[in-house]
Structures are given as C-alpha cells and as structure tokens.
Amino acid sequence: MIYKYISRHKFHVIALVLNLFSMFCAGIWVIFALSSSSQPQILRYADAMGIFKIGSVGDILMLIITGMIFAGANYFLAINLQGRNKFLSLLTSAVSIFICALIFIAVSAMIGVN
Image (spheres, rainbow, N blue to C red):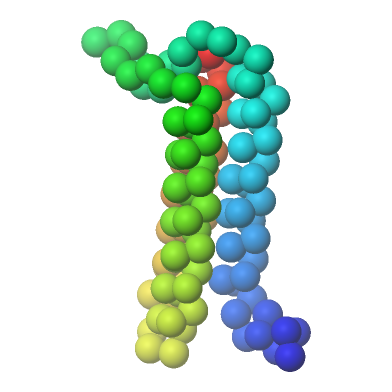
C-alpha cells in the first residue's frame, strides 16, 4: 500500500524527504556550531547599513522550523494539485526544494558570520 502511494507521488515524496533532511541537518549544524556561544547572533547584515538585526540561536532554529512547516504544507498542496494539474503539482514541489535550499544557504551564512 505504501509502495503504491510512493510510486504514484514519487517526485513529491522525494522533494519532501530532501527538504526535511536538509532542514534537519541545518538544525543539527546550528546546534553544534553556535550553542556554546553566549553572545548575540548576527541575523542580518547589509553593506550599506552594517548589522541591523541580532538574535539568538533560537531565532535561527525558528527559521529552520518555518522551513520544515513550509515543506510539509507544500507537500500536501502538491498532492492535492496532482489530480487537477500535474504541472502545477510538480512546480509546487520544485519551488519547495528551491526555497528550502535558500533557507539552508541563509542558515549557513549566519553560521559563517557568527
């Protein structure tokens, strides 16, 4: 039964697993890299303004949790779109992969700055 479901929604399941795995790895990376730091973390930096947002490790972890929720919501949206429009369904999963990759890059930049 589960094999039929996975074979029918192969790209969506792969996208969900890839997104959740990348967000989970980013969370583990944040915990190991920044948990021993007692100073505030730089969250946003611009060349023109300098540092304009600081926060804690919890703020970075909330960004990762938001990415996981986004990936799950897009998965269910893509599954529901599958019957109506296959192209939009695949596009939704692809955009989900792209957004989670951007979140992973942002988190890695935050770790690199701090």
